[in-house]
Length: 316
Image 1 (cartoon, rainbow, N blue to C red):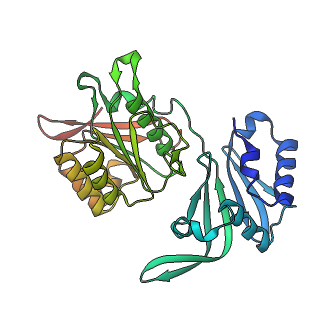
Image 2 (tube, rainbow, N blue to C red):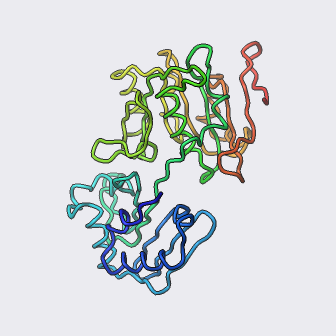
Image 3 (tube, rainbow, N blue to C red):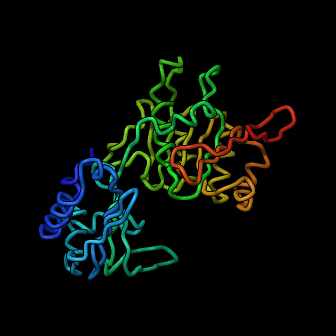
């Protein structure tokens, strides 16, 4: 169950108390677990986003000072020590929650060097859903070889592929006695910190007992580092898309390592419009292409399986 007090402790006392009062008055325990975001914007109402609705708290208008005070609490009163995360646009909190940050961006030598005059903070509530990968497990596992198929999971944003991927990693890493699948070593390159949600070196989400994690690092660099240093049996990364990612995946496959990745898209034709991903599809590296249902979280819409006899993808 969501620990609301853990999240509200980052807000100024006035705002935290008011949000808690509104939530207690208007939301039951079941609804509390449907909370996905708390959006805080300077001189505008707090907005609560639930899975099935949105609630605007018209009477809670944060001042610019209160937004900055909140950021101070998030950064343990040391904004300077969190500068790298601020420049990336988000900070990971204990419990795996993430706070998105917007404001006036400072660019130096083509890179973000700071964000001044913070105007918005978006508390994204972390939820680990045990069993979220149940629908795709049979397509990913190669039980006979106690391994996995090279897999690309595709969906538009907000459909749940990251939640599904997190649960899939947990199962592959820990193993599943009921199907006699022994756990295998997973190298997770968690560029945005969304999967393991590392907090001071400790994963806040359960990603299995045989999972090694590199976070806050570009996927391409992280994949090569992971392969050279940790000898994973399978490497995992979320939302691939550029040519550097593709080169790193090619390198991994040439090293005999299996891979599970995700990408944004709706249909096979859609993802082929991305030249980098299309290159991987044309080289037939992926043995499974899994498209998630656009309308129902956690459901599979289509699965394409690579026929090694003629190197064609067949709709399963």
